[in-house]
Length: 332
Image (cartoon, rainbow, N blue to C red; front, side):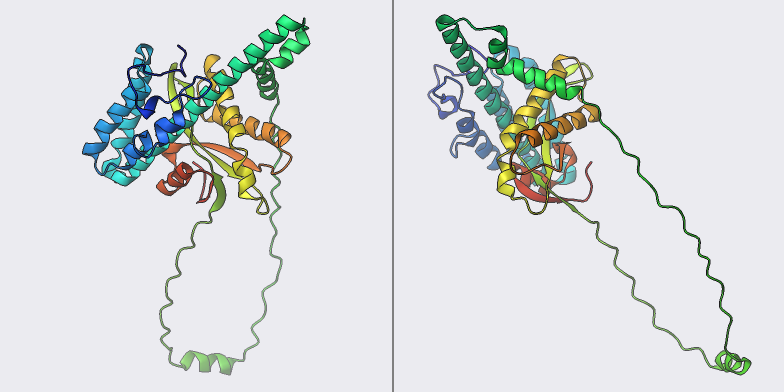
């Protein structure tokens, strides 16, 4: 039984509903209003409730024998978030936990869809092989994994060109001092006049930091390599677009963004590359370029992938709701 087919034959709960292709229906597992994972977490009101709920969820999501390591890493990430509750408050900690779970949901849905797609592609290739003899070019184009890998490799070879930022030259003030045209009598009269007490000027309020508008998509949970160990990193895609572009067109790009990020981060982990800021920035630029090359509508001005833990509570909430405008003073 593969990673997606996690049905428990002895369990009749909705947590094990299957899709027609045989994969687990992760949408039901996470979003069912009665028994779903997200509903269970959202209903908690204290750390005393939330911790055991997360323990049960970890057992549900990582139930196979070989899941002991990923389950421990998942619980460790959750515990690090819960430890911040004393500083940020319970609601903020719970929101971050929901963000991690939404990212986990997206990852599992995408992996299930990829598994089903690969299975259908394999069956189609085998059927064509039985009916006709295909050449190497047809076999290459018919395999989305080979084709996607070649595209990712080509994108990885593209160098980033950095332009020079020109600074304007200093301008010297050449104005000469003007002569004082007042007479001695006027100066003396001014000096003898009693000084008037001026009211103290009210302090000016500090200018509000200028916020930049982004569109926050749902968190993406990617398997990455960190210091030689595999772990899962929840990243929120933040998209900058032109003001005239419609947000609905950006939302439609979400599946492409998820697929591009997961494929590239997974390939980097397989190659032994640690997921540092440089790699994440490179992946974001490659995905942006790939999507802009494929999209006939809206074009992405900038795509940033930001660790969920580095963003404020309101941005995380907007991301959990999916595809909402947010204001950010500066990216972490």
